[in-house]
Length: 110
Image 1 (cartoon, rainbow, N blue to C red):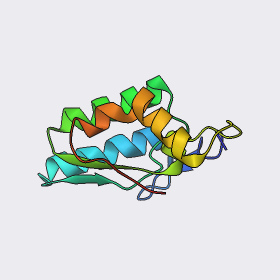
Image 2 (cartoon, helix red, strand yellow):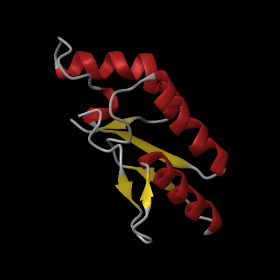
Image 3 (cartoon, helix red, strand yellow):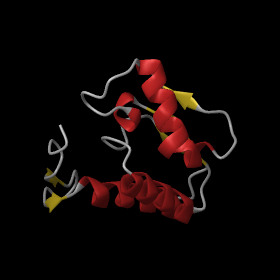
Image 4 (cartoon, rainbow, N blue to C red):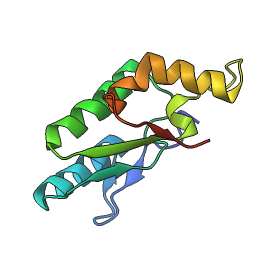
């Protein structure tokens, strides 16, 4: 699963790109268009590593646009890790995803 999205084609140009480049491009469009809100609807990362969460968080914060982060199962789940969905979700929210919630109401997909 970790290698599933290593090579993509840009949705407009068809040229090779990466999911990171496409994510930054979408955020740039939101900033340029002065979006009122950015909504991330889950599965933004595949496994919540410190570096991937830091990248997403820094990119969102740099837009200056408010955002809502809804964590999908890939945002908090490591394949094969023992534990119930509820305990794994809470573990990774506490360990990695908490910066996205910034004390606000947190939403996640079951």
